[in-house]
Image (cartoon, rainbow, N blue to C red):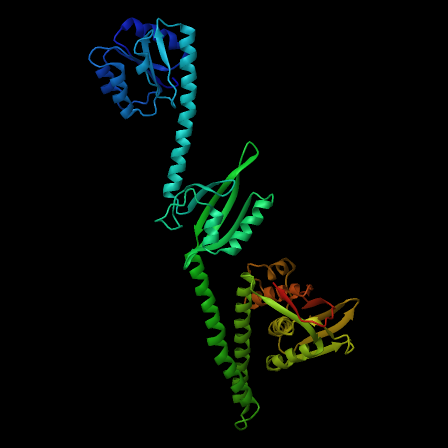
Length: 482
């Protein structure tokens, strides 16, 4: 298999034979022509690695042949073959500005060295052209903006996919572009990145109104020397618009759904309190069932909103000194209808002194935690069963334990209850229960606490949830973002 093709055009067959013998060791296919017109016609579409052209030929001299030849072989180097001093001032090279020609009579070793040097240079040239073609295709067909800069962020090349397409920023400075667009946060991030050893960074900026862009910046190195930056801009406008729609949906969910449910819940409570006249037992049971469903819907709505905020890093808790006794009393009062409906008994065992019950936590978040666990304990325990709640201080922790008499949880399924991807279990197959426990864990962790589950099955039934909360007291309110 040959490495490529060498073209020899000379009206003297003796010169052709000498050149063929000289170039034979290179393992290239050698194409020879004594008629320049025939060479142009037959090799118009061939890939030629180098062409050796006699200058003086009848009908078409070497210079005019070269002018026609380069029209279809613009990247092929041409070497002229001429007698000593013949048309020397007219000889021009086609290889990166240099020129080479062979003088007749020629020395075989010298010619081989010249041609071998040109062929190696041609190989490098072809590799560079291939890489350039690949880069041009990436620039052309990529939906991203690709920017190459020097070490000072002066733009060397770009494909104008996102930045204003009616303006070419080549020779502009990318830092100045961000400054002009008043993208202060992006500028700050990029300047910090320059000082650090990190190879890559990402940030968002807005090049135009209502156009959101994510920039990925990478440092370019050559021989371990930092030579510039590759900046890829990704248009994330559609993604941001979808996120805004999700946020709008969540706001609608929390307002338009929770508001009427709260009103319904209050109206049902008034009915159960006989505020509009005494109810029959059958009526009371029906209203109680509706009230339980309303409570469940409110908790579910809160859980969906909280999960959304956790996933988007928007959930914040505000810690201040509160009484865990009062928080627990609120939760029990809120769930009394659910517990009474199943004829369950709630046993409270508190070993806390009044002063020990006060420590730093977010009262609203703690209500969510206790409501989720106690509600689950009631829901998954049989009618007439007992639910035991104990609160005590051990060392620097407040421990809250909730024990039910349900069917328990298989050991292999306990790990799934708190997984970020909610998975069904035998006990927690009802929609929303796994979500509530995931949120419970996140809220406890935001308080620097932990939660443990112990479960018993078969004859000795029941599950115990134990919350460990560090006791801290503060004179100021503390904001924590999850």
